[in-house]
Every structure is written in structure tokens, then in C-alpha cells.
Image (cartoon, rainbow over the protein chains, first blue to last red):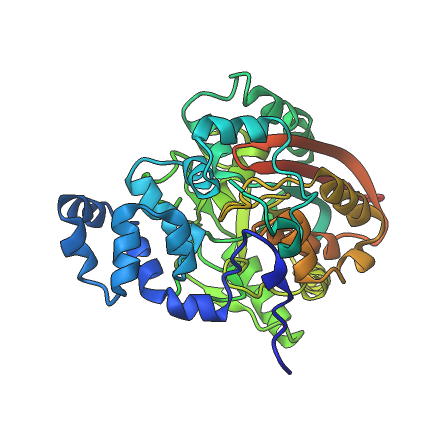
Length: 134
Length: 282
């Protein structure tokens, strides 16, 4: 049976499926290593040197150094793993979420206080065509 | 005989734990969230369950990508709060119930649910935030807890139907345990939220409200909802709600809705909470 990828039509959303998991394995395992305090210290002391301990692609390493959260997701990162990098920087989930939408943290927090992002107009990629989001 | 007397569903937003741990629960942003659980705390304090079976998901704390169990049952005597990158939450060690947990594992596996047995596992906010919401900030948790970690991080999570039927098998397992124990089952996670990508911040109150309604009155129909509906309508992380169906399967077909609470936002997430009692329960 072919695997249905019907979720690929959802705009602005990357489902962490088999392909992403394979692509992002070492990126995510690097993030996982930051669960240990001594690794957080080693990473902070020499980010590039620490990243070289993991067989990640150059693009993945650059996305980490740039703290480009959307790029990390594109390259197979999973938010529950990349958020550990955020935590290492002292950044909350909400900080990361705001950054990924292109909003300031205040704008994003205000959107949430007003009921969040509506599903209206945000269900299918066809609804996002020609629109500027974030 | 052990008996499941009630089911509780609740979101397990990490920021709720952080608000409690840093004494910010009375701030205007957080006060309405905790107010929604005041009645629940009284309810469970009066009920005094012996054991909570706590269905939750690990957020890359105990399980990395090295090992991704779909259903992992915590059979250890104790579980430490996990360091999620900020240091562990300052909450008590979670005490398990190995005898019942091992009994459940055996019963479920022979009932054709192939559980992963876990003897060493730290528990993250997915498990400790629901405990904090229901029991407050005691020096020791007043119940034994059997963690049931469900994979909802790596796609695909188990189907709603599988979760609902697992709940039914859990009930059978509990009821065949020969000690008199009062058991409550928690289903946690949700409600609508998306933490990643340009669509982050999605909240769907209509979906959440229908989900709560159908959880009470039409769980079988709800259990057939395909994953893509959760992902599209409730956000990429909203798919966590399949875990509520494990709780629902473990209580009576006809239940009494004792309490319901819904609030937006807690950080990025819609907070949903419901308590379902078996009719005629203690």
C-alpha cells in the first residue's frame, strides 16, 4: 500500500514523517545532546567545533549557527528537538514559534491572546498562493 | 478487584508548568487557566484514587530518534522529572505501581497490543504538568502513577481507532487485577496547536469544541477521524489528541460529564480539559 501524503497540502506545515526523520536524524540527535548540561556548556564554548562531532550536512550546521528555525525544519529538524537548542539559548517555545512565522514575539503573543491563527484560509496551499504570510 | 472509575483529559502545555514553578500562576495571563482546574483539584482530592494511568507523550526527553516506541508502558518503581534543557521541573519524583503496570503489560500483550515495557525512564512536562494541574504543588504526589507514553512526535502516531481500542484493553487489564484499587485514567495533550513553521499559532475553537462534544457522546465516530484532519484542523501538534481516545476507551460507553474547561491561549496552545465519570462510580 502506498503511503498517503495527503498532509503535504497543508500550508506552512512540515509533517515529521519518515523522509524528514531520515534526513534530520543527526540534526535532531545533536539537539538531543543538549539535554545534558555539560554538552550545553561545550556547545556554547565552541558552537562550530561542537557541531563537527555530528555527521550533519553543511546546510544543517549553518542553519543551527544562524538559528534559522524554519530552515532547520526544512532540513529534517523536528520542533521538539530544535526547541532544545532554543532552551540552550534561553528561548521559549513561543519565541521560536514567533520567529518561524516572521512576526515579532509581541505580535505573535497578541495574535495568541486574540484567539490564535484562524484555520480559515489556512487549510490548503491553494489558499496561500499569491499571499504574503508571516 | 481494581476498577477504573473516571477519566480525565487535559492539555499538558510546558509553559503551564513553568508558570507554576516560578510562582506566576496568579498573574492575569495565567490566573484564568488555573481557575479552570480549581474544581478538578477538589474533585480528585475527594475521589482519592490509588493509581493514575497517565497517557501522555514524551517530547524527545526520554526517547530520542534512536528508539521510537508507539506505546511504552512505565513499569518502574519510580520516574524522575526529566531535564528538558532548562533543568528538571522542581516537582516530586513520580512513584509507579510496578505490580499493576506489569500485570497490564502482560494482559495487553496477550490481548494483542504489543506494548514496550520500560524500566528506566525520566518523565517530562507531558506527564508532570497534568499532575500539577490536578494535584497542585504537594511535597509528594498523592497517587501512584503508571506512565503510558505514546509516540505522537514521529509521523504516524497510532490511529484514533487503535488508541480507543487500547483503552478498552486497558480497562480489561485493570479489572482483572486482584487488588482493590481505585484507578483514574488521564489522556493528555492538545488541544489545537501548531508549534512549527509559518502556520504556527493555529487555534481552532470550533474543532476543539466538537472534539470535546463527540468525546462524550460519539467516541466511536470520533475514533475514525483520520490524522490529516487533526493536522489540518487542529495543527501539526494537535494530533496529540488521539491520546484522549485511550482514556475514552477505558471508561464506560455512557459517561457523566462532570467538568469541562476551555481557554485560549496558554503560550501557543488551546487548553482543553474534561472529566468523565463512569455512571454509578464510587
